[in-house]
Amino acid sequence: MLRRLGLAALVAVLALAPAASAAKKKTVKLAPKGATTLALSDGAASALQSLGIAAAPLKPARAGDAGLRFPITAGKLNAKTYAGQIKHAGGISLTRGDTRVELRNFIINVDSAPDLTARVGSSRVSILDLDLSDAKISKSGRKLTIAGVKATLTKTAADALNAAFGTDAFAEGLELGTATVSGRAAKRH
Image 1 (cartoon, rainbow, N blue to C red):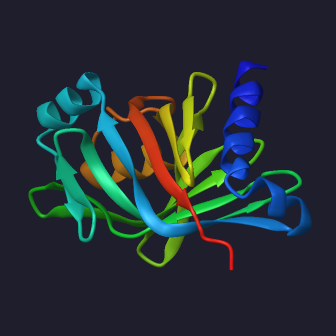
Image 2: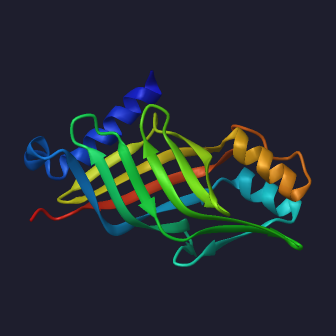
């Protein structure tokens, strides 16, 4: 129930940016500005280090003090139900020895089961489940920030990483960290 309430609050704030025109239009669009930042939990960072797996951003993503930052390229939400997607550029590579797994072009899906998908090779895979129940949302003008989104590994991602790196250390529900989305509503024309 809390997860659903968090989701409802998230999508309501995302829709507030052009609230008056959103009722007339079918969608709320996010401008290609802003980013989603993933701050790895201490446990996830330690686990990767103990396995000898290096995590590095794929351009135009960047690493910084706050975590890995992935630029938002677009977003589109239904103005009535507030379901939709937020698309990103760049990605992350996980490397150990000759094994390299690249996860690119993330999409956050805001729906009844929020998740983050990535392009892995020629496939799109759900890699993170997103828990919005503790999300903190703020809005100032067209700028909005959603902080405190807990990101945990999906079973599909855990199985794929275990197979790629020859381990059983990755498990469904493993908390990878906390995501913060800082976006901007597109200008109305």
